[in-house]
Image (cartoon, rainbow over all chains, first blue to last red):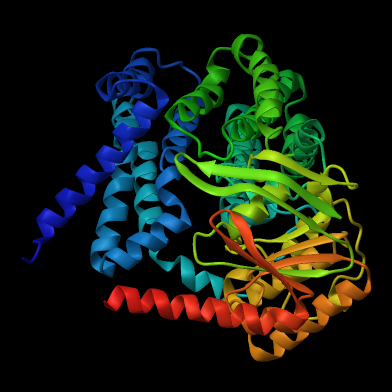
Length: 322
Length: 224
């Protein structure tokens, strides 16, 4: 019996829904409760408690893009390319990207952020399209990066994200020209979010086992490398912004500090879960960390305690491998 | 020397290794043979500490995992990682400072290219190259000849012999019996969780004949 196109797509999306519900169950919640919570965190709360900060819409839109990350993995794309025709693949990948950012777009529209909403939709659509052509890029010579000395997360991640990083440098330049520090801080903060993304993919246990190090030393080494490399990416825009906005340097440095803490939390969370991939609860936690700057005291109540808790958990978990 | 003392491992009700005792001596090359699912990879994973187990694995080198160069049967490489970055990563992980990696490129690999452009055999050679640079006393090679071309097989034979000359212990598995007979000092047949037979060079043919006979008998039983 030949499956019709509609049946095929219906099967695909109900399958994805099943997988997502399984993730919620893995997190320890009944799927229905998970969906309600998700709607509250992603839509209801931001729609009702929209802070009147010029950077917040950008932050919220970035978080929306962040949500498409789990469906953008290369392995997943490869698998779908094998299963579906090019036309079907493009339809499925663009549709699921659009569905994922749709709640964010709705909230942005409620708050009259038409440009950002359409921008978010467009980027999500383009990311879905570009997923098909990943292989072509690989025939190009390897892109040299400043991060090859200490592989592998930054070297690999930078190769994927360097156009976005360059764009964010441009945003910082625009922020300076238009005298808008908020925008500049968001751009620097977004660089940190990109760096967090470098640690989303779980490495195989062999890559951890290889290390001749205690769990503590392994974690410190990972945190040190990430901090140094993230610093090298944000140092120029941060100095430029602090030069042009010397009175607001405290605000800028606070953003940078939260960025470093969020990066550390991502790494520690990864090795807390290792070798299992991030689950829904981790995604919630990371989103909460990313949007935490809207509540300045969150730094004390969220990030700082988390660092200690996660370090301890990751340390215990890694004892099985190191 | 690595001594296995009553090594046992089970997955649920499936007992893979059962009170296995054996000593891998220094300066020798060991081949492990057995059917698919007989526990070769599980044994290697226990030796490397990647798998928990009952019993004891004794060695003068502690922690043993840091003194083993392990070539797993299933290799994983990131798409946008270059060969050079992989080798650097492995060397950093093992705290080895190797300055002239490119000059030591015995397999003539395109180290500055993405690993995703490598063939299966090239990936195997890259992983092998990276573990050889670690200069450890023990090498565990799970199917080192899988996917590599004839020329590279010859090179791997030479490398294994060179490791032996340097006093290293090599423990390897292979589905191609002849690759073991050419390199090993001793071959162990892993069956039902233990080494059913352990033979030295003089008796390699006898072991091969007995394994062959068993396969023929089983096939005959199935056909009946």
